[in-house]
Length: 84
Image 1 (spheres, rainbow, N blue to C red):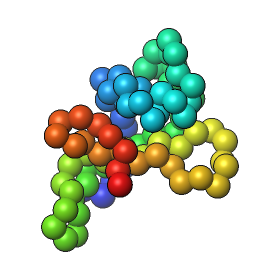
Image 2 (cartoon, one colour):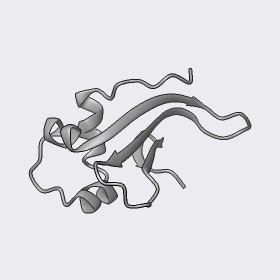
Image 3 (cartoon, helix red, strand yellow):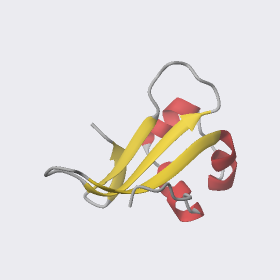
Image 4 (spheres, rainbow, N blue to C red):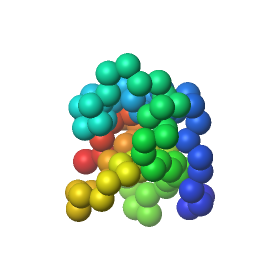
């Protein structure tokens, strides 16, 4: 399914636990709801066109365009992590 999906609050909870996300946004005590208001986020149910990844993929972009690529997160052994 290649249509964007809304990220649930439970998924935002997972996302703010990713160390690179916490560091990049300087998160300390923000709630998932507060973080969801700070960034643009979308989820896809992704299926690779060749052998590779099948599962949730999250794309996050801050509210400031720096020229850096958005964060792309995937599930790796049941945990969210940055995609390679």
